[in-house]
Image (cartoon, rainbow, N blue to C red):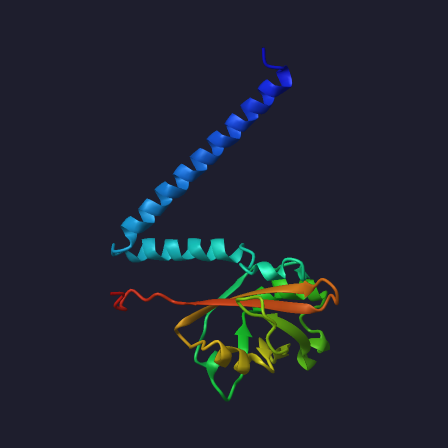
Length: 199
């Protein structure tokens, strides 16, 4: 006869196995739906709903950069932006960041208020790229009513060949574990356009 605690362990293992199996089945079912939708024309409402759902999921993800797990702490939500012409204009040299994101996600990390003069002078920040490599230092600053990453942004987008209307950037704010200074992690990907020929 099996000891009582051994029966409990077996039951728990079976329960874990069953829940993993169910989760796997759900993932496979979801993948089949997505594959089936690949060539399907969606009505505007459905396309917008899927787009908004994707944004919600990505906003709450941590950056997929394993190298950073021991180097930084206190991740913000993700800021998502399709690069614009002004983000990649040689005469501008800045990445504009939405005010709402800065106020809700970055200023609490800095423990600053929106009108703080330190923001207009600029705060030196360290930026990590998609591979977890440090880029050149940049400044996080406020120009009139616009929050921007400057002093190194042009070099960053040129090194990584980022293009306006082609690349979507994902930006997270955090703190360096050792120095407690503000850092950013930036990842990106090419945006799929339905009118492009994928063959």
